[in-house]
Amino acid sequence: EVQLVQSGAEVKQPGESLKISCKTSGYTFTSHWISWVRQMPGRGLEWMGQIFRDDSDITYNPAFQGQVTISADKSFGVAYLHWSSLKASDTAMYFCARHRDRSGSGLDYWGQGTQVTVSS
Amino acid sequence: QSVLTQTPSVSGAPGQRVTISCTGSSSNIGAGYGVHWYQQLPGTAPKLLIYDTWNRPSGVPDRFSASKSGTSASLAITGLQAEDEADYFCQCYDSSLSTSLFGGGTKVTVL
Image (cartoon, rainbow over all chains, first blue to last red; front, side, top):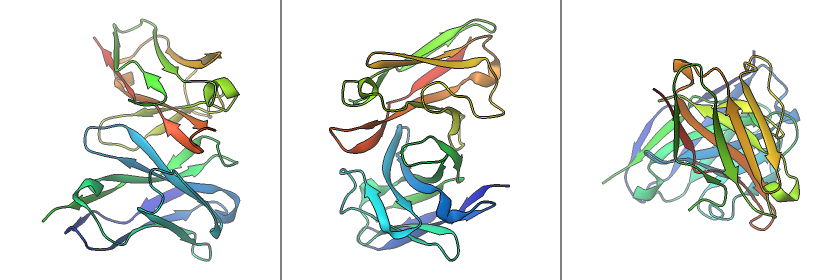
């Protein structure tokens, strides 16, 4: 069974760093792209970027380029989303999701989401 | 305002047919990139309903169907059920922005 299990909710202060994770299982990690998607409170979905296999193949939404870092450890089948300095506007639910086959294909399996709250 | 424009809300009685539109441009839907549709129930992760414009993943009821014409795509729900009350999002790649995009979402209400 394909599963994407995300790390738990986080409450951070502005300026702090944070790395959340997405642990995959039930399929070959190196065969599928993984995307990260943001959903701000009461808002729609925003595609942030994607990674394939390891840190050598990453694509960012230009709106998120430089704001976050996507990485992965293919040995453990885990994808990460990292902030070096959080802002209050980073408060949102973050989802990881697996691409069905190729880059640009639909997202067929999703993590449960990680709530990130940034507040002083 | 989203590059992929969706009607904010649609409603229908049980058993009726509703359609959700996703209007784009020549750099996304009109360029032939696949359109994907998702259903998001309150407090849950989105679920893939349609991929590559027309295709249903296994397990998705055939009450859900999709089409495309020019720079717009549509999702139709026939035989509307109470459990279909949710937010629906379209997704497509945009070559001008060099990124994948989601539409702003459509809330479906079952009367």
